[in-house]
Length: 379
Length: 81
Image (cartoon, rainbow over all chains, first blue to last red; front, side, top):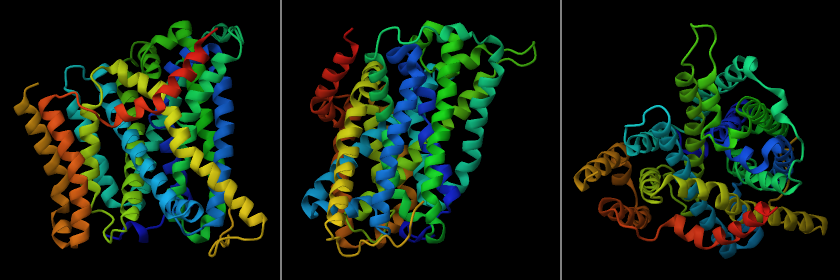
C-alpha cells in the first residue's frame, strides 16, 4: 500500500470528498439550531455564510497557487517562520482532535436519540472511530472511491425526504420576513460560517493530493461543490420550516423528524430508518476526512517516515475524548453551537487569512519566497 | 456502567485499532517510538479518566475556558433584542 504522500486523487474524487465533508453531519445537525437562531430568515444566513465560505476558499486556492506542492502547515511555516508556524500547527491539531471527537459523539447521540435508544453510546463511538481509522489506513484514493456511493445515498435520502414531503409543506410558515431585525441573522451567520463553511479551509491539506494534470480545474469544482452543498442545506432548512413551522427550532435532528412525518398511502411508511442511516453516513464520511487530515498533519509535523504509525493512537485518543468530554448532551450542544464557530475562526481561519495577506504583500513587493511559483494554475 | 465494562470496551477498541499496526511499530525507528510514546501520555490520562469516571480537566475545558468565553459574550449580544 502506498504511503499517503505518494497517493493522488482526481478532481472528481476531490469534489466527492468535499461534498461529503460539507454536507455530512451538517445536514443532520444544522436545521434545528439554525431555525432557532435565525427563525424564518435562516435561509438568508445560509446564503451569506456560503458566500463567505467561497471567499475563504478563494484564499485557500490563492495560497495553493503560491505553494503548489506543500501542505497547509508547511506554508504556515514558510510565512510565519518555524516557531510561530509550529504553534499554529499544534493549535490546529488540537482543534482537529476536538472536531473529530464532536463528530464521533454526535453520531452516537443521533443513534441513542432516534433509532437505537437502549444501546450504549460507546458502541457507536467505538465503531465509528475504528471504521474511520481503517478507511484512513487504506488511504485517500480508497476514501475517494468509497465515498461516491455513500455520498449518493446521502444526497438521495435528502432529495427523497424533500420531494415526498411536498404534500405536507405549508408555504405560509416562511413568513414573516425579518420578524426580529438583523441580529438573529448575524447569529445564524456566526454559527453557519463556523460549521460547516469555515471548516472548508481544511481542504488546503487535501489539495496537494490532486493530480497535477487536473489541478487547474480544482478551483472550479470546489466553488461549484460549495454552491451545491449550500443549495442542499438550503432546501433542507426551507423544507423543515415549511413542515414543522415554529417548533422546528425545538426538534432535535429536524430532517429525521420530517422523514418520520412522510407517509405515502399505506405502503410507504417508516422511511425514517433508511433516511437516518443514509444521513448519518454523511457524518461518518466527515469523521474519516477529518481523521485523515489530522493524521497527515501530525505525521508531517513530526517528520515521520511512516504516515500511518500514529493513526491508532490518534483514533484511541479521539474515542476517549468523545467518552469523557461531556456529562450531559446539553453541554455538548452548547459547545458545538456557541463555542465551536469561534474556535474555527480563531485557530483555523485567522492564521490562513493572515498568511494569504502576507504572501500577497510579499509578492506585490516583488520579494516572493524561494519556491513560490504558481506552476499549476488553478481556475 | 461498571468499571469492568469500561475496561473491556477500552481494551477491545484498543485491540481493534492497534492490531493492524503491530508490524509498523516493530519496524519503526527509535525516534518514531518516542513520538508514539508522546501520544501515549494523553491516551493514558484519558483512559484513567474514562475508567474511573473522573471529572478531570480535558481538551473541551481548555477550549471552553479560553475561546468559549468570547463566544458566549458574542452569542449573548446576538440574543439581546
